[in-house]
Length: 195
Image 1 (cartoon, rainbow, N blue to C red):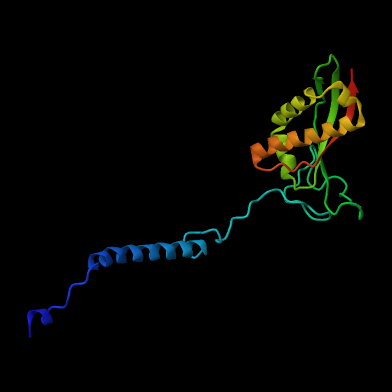
Image 2: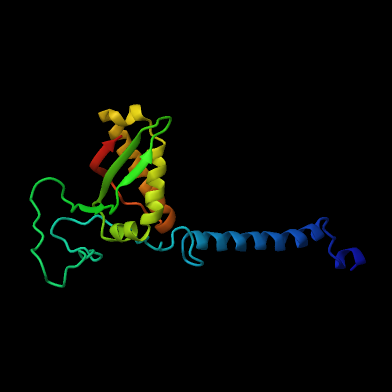
């Protein structure tokens, strides 16, 4: 046997295979790991069980509100039971009355307005608790909205309805900033005086 027959011929590119093989294995392993993460098998990927956000929920009529606010001065078991009608909305409506009236000047006017306000929610009692807790910040935001209203706007029905919507938005912005959720659906006028 000759020397040429005993030694197999050297392949060109053998070094290239030695370099690319580990890179290919590394890429396949990384892709597999990513696939398992995306499927939620490891590492809590996008399909993993998501934690449910505990925002105030709608409360149906006849259903107990786990966050019901007790009326001030009422003792346990005191007073008449709440009675709900069968018609209208399927959800309970709760009201929050601002204790003090809002007095403000109007934009580009010498006129003053004095308004008694309340708001409503169909969400659980946490919204009412948060309104009480953040009443100072809510009042400040509402006064800014009132002061940015012209006398012409506030004297028309459409202007008053627009003001109610803007006040609702202002309340919900404060509650969302402070608690992560708004929940107020409407603002109501109790008293309305322009001087």
